[in-house]
Image 1 (cartoon, rainbow, N blue to C red):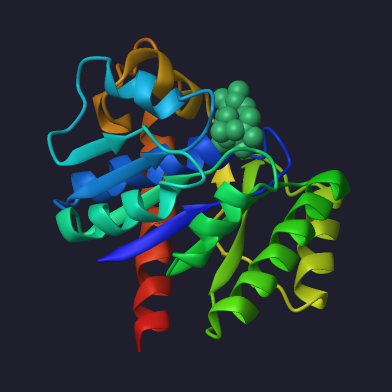
Image 2: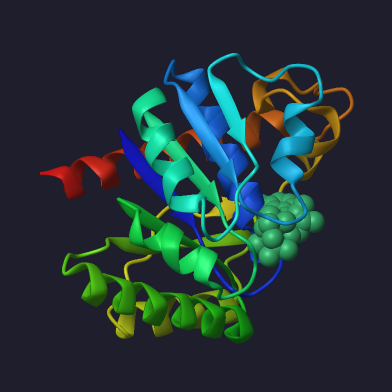
Length: 223
Ligand SMILES: Nc1ncnc2c1ncn2[C@@H]1O[C@H](COP(=O)(O)OP(=O)(O)OP(=O)(O)O)[C@@H](O)[C@H]1O
Ligand SMILES: [Mg+2]
């Protein structure tokens, strides 16, 4: 059982997209997954109402700042992976979810505005870790990166984060139409129609590498 929390108070950083991509990849590998949908827009719940949701993904969305810890705890008894999609603010709900995490992933786009959002999340994680008197492992996931070029601002953000001692996952989530279309068509990436959605195979490959690195990271943390 692992609790993975996606947090960044910067709106639109990529939390919901990364959370759903990870959930569907883990489910494809046969794992049971509960998504705690704490994003007020409830995108993942809406995806769950479309056809094609794998049976091994459960979505819980009746969460408040008071109930989020209970919801996460219950989910850990029912699924191998619990993924929490947080709202895009620094709230008590986010702090409570972070306090329950085995790993906090901080999706960040390649701009300094986003890097500032990431820095705020990391301060919040550090405070929760002090309260809980334990380490809360966390890393940044670079999102919406260009498939073609590594831009200078992205490299800057990467370097700034690493210089600040922040762990950055090697695999970022590339900008792909398939990740957006997943929310429109439902199901999994592999189930998207390549006639309708461009570069599905590349999105699947990127999503596999991303999920693979998350699993390796969880194993490293556990050992
Ligand atoms: N890798 C990607 N490829 C293509 N589009 C993406 C990608 N990541 C995010 N997006 C798009 O960027 C927008 C914001 O992403 P998302 O909703 O995942 O961010 P968020 O951090 O959950 O936002 P909020 O703080 O509002 O909850 C959405 O329109 C989404 O479709
Ligand atoms: Mg969201």
